[in-house]
Image (cartoon, rainbow, N blue to C red; front, side, top):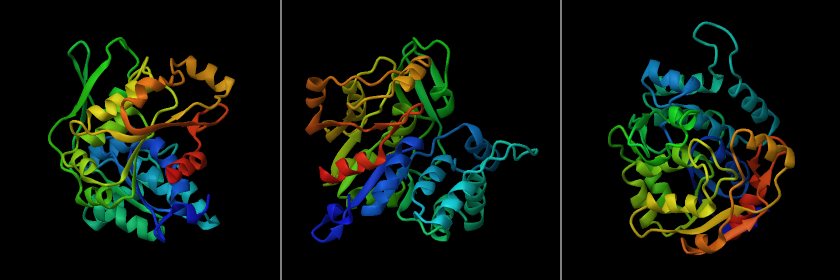
Length: 328
């Protein structure tokens, strides 16, 4: 892959990636080398260091923002050291234990600069990011899941990490109050040549962005290619028993009525047998491709290939994924 493959009419392609957490950040590392990339990140995390900072300081959770910032650092020794330091997690200290230095830096920047957006801009400038990171909204809202028995679970982390009564499937998600899309995020979708949705946890990383007023409208209005990257494995708390068509079904459901993705990318490559057995102990299974059903739910096509890497921890192969995204 080289820069020429990412050019359109002599200009670098503009690619906007929407999601949150580890999934989306894995795509950014390769795309930043050959395109003008923007990450639009969910701001509904409620657990760990991010959740504590959110509760104690009244700020938007910085964790998913930090993951994207880390991936968009330049590929040089200085930035590699910055990446290690930003992701350092304190192991002791009253009030410090469990926090990552990067989360604390962002919290300080939010306060010093007078807002989440200004803080992200300042840290991005200081670290010479090769790309842009934008919160999907500046409104502080909680994620809520409606389960199949009619009960609700409030809080992104409680939804994602629930272990009991998993027979109660997620019917849909909604927010504790209305949230409006951050205007630069809206504009990034309109200006993009390609918009990539995911990868990431379906109900707690990807779809929460669609609950923000203005984002589905931007996706309907943009002329960009819209590409959904399907998960590698199912998750017992969110997508137990899902096939690939179930994933794209949910994405389409949260778009404006009648709006479909142009492409869907699904891994059909081999998965390490060691990883497969380890994931099965957690009730996580490779996503099964039901091609004929998937083809009915996208405009242009389903793209398959070997997009999985890792012997014990599975991740999307960012280089292969980026090559496919650019080639579409």
